[in-house]
Length: 160
Image 1 (tube, rainbow, N blue to C red):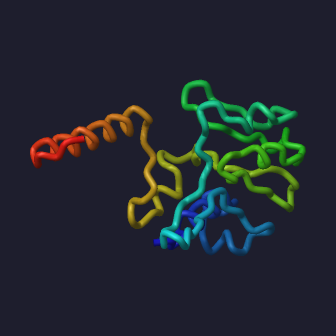
Image 2 (cartoon, rainbow, N blue to C red; image 1 turned 180 degrees about the vertical axis):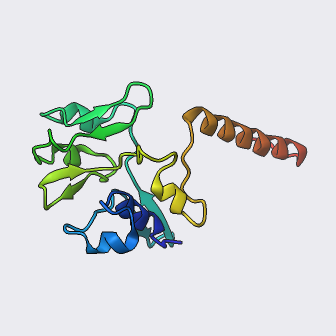
């Protein structure tokens, strides 16, 4: 769909006012932490956001330890006070989703909206294209889906 509601919700959530009308008047204007990219070959829009990688390379290369990873949730968090704006994290990110806050000259990335039950981008998505779930729930869902596909193939007489 590519409506970019997620981008707007992200910027508003990270604004001082937490309001769309207030956010556009703020200086500096609040910045989003995810990007919607249109892939013309497939006519599809894809939300590019921090994947909070299991062994996040951005964390290991940060010379000031401004990036850290929670051992339980695996969330990669950014401490702006420790960031020196060297952009090493941005250059190593496999997904290209660590942005630059040009006004503050520091890195900027998704923080999973820690003050919310679910990230603002997910809550704002009108189509349900963005989901926020536990890895175990997601894996169970994918296994059930795969089992259903296999069962349908067996019933229909398909062989794999």
